[in-house]
Length: 496
Image (cartoon, rainbow, N blue to C red; front, side):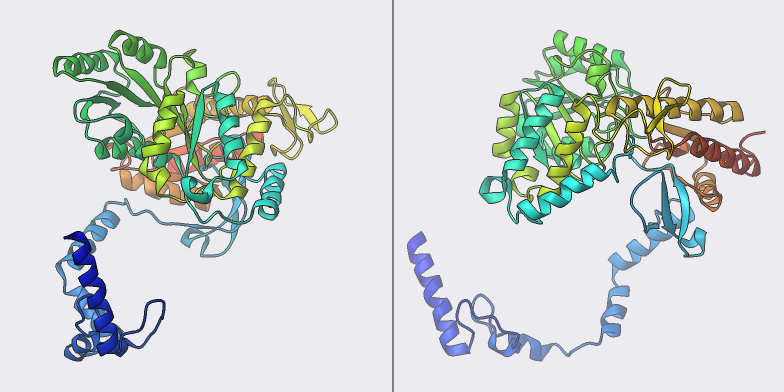
């Protein structure tokens, strides 16, 4: 039956080409009168029945559709609520200061201090990392034009996966195009309808979307509430869950608070569950050696899966990864859809990331030395320029911690209410979405680049400006930022 159908289908296509003037296979043509559709109906017959429309006529027709009306209403609502997300143009490399062009700068280039990037260690424009990326362009090309399992795995990909495993002290690692992709492609591989996933209510959108894609039963527990997590674990057991997985952010991106991983791992042991941590806002700078929240909480050997990104503290490029148990990584290579159906990471990104991990694991950067460093009185070394180029990883982490303490102390003294405790994500709590948006615009006019966040990114009436501190910031940068906040905060009557 199948072979007969294919034979008839093939014969039908030959007949159509012969008698309709359609081109032979492999012949490309722009002549619509010579093309035909699948079953031989000539396209010119359909074209003759449809009068040619101008671009403006098609535009008017689109505006009459219900979908257009709905989109228009939604966008109007977003704008009126102060939730519209504008994209300002950055005309310089990512650093402590950037050149920005936006309506707030009269659409003219202006240098401002950048306090809204994930550039925690200040490595996004590091000369050693950039040189590694340049070298890889010459040695490995611009791109791989393939997924990993076909012909997209270069030696540098395998080397980076090994190096990440060494850094995290895990058994194996798999690279993705982003950590969003890593989270998206994780749960549906490991969990089926008879399984359970337990997720913190404030987990990142990528975890939420990944959970939605899998068929496991979902149990959401209140943010950082271990009693509620235990209740949900008990409920999952009562409902006959086969396998259980607890998923949490290591550091929550909108609040800067840290998951109690020691307690989570204890409950996982008690209820025979595995633990997954998204550590994007911790890898590289949290923990004694920068190995993230599992290291900070002393549970590196008890966390089964860690996902993270190469796009934040680790140079700010692109890409993500999942690292953990060998068998978990192996089945992800076989079945994880974002991995199987996305191009492999460009070799320049991979090579730059290799240099980042070399920097994190070595004792001292070749660029550093006593002649380029000075003490700032806080126990952390710093350069005269305020940059990160001459500092080793431990010094960068120490400087980041010092900058964060300084900013939090001065902002608290100015009267602002802050979220989190010690992390370089510092939410300045505003409440009203429109005020947060207006304040961010006013701060940009003062030379401070920050962004307001509001619903649906954060809960209603909990709008905030998220300030992100970097090791690249100088003491003067921190003080200038606090002074601008104090000025605008008084104008908005947020502080006395």
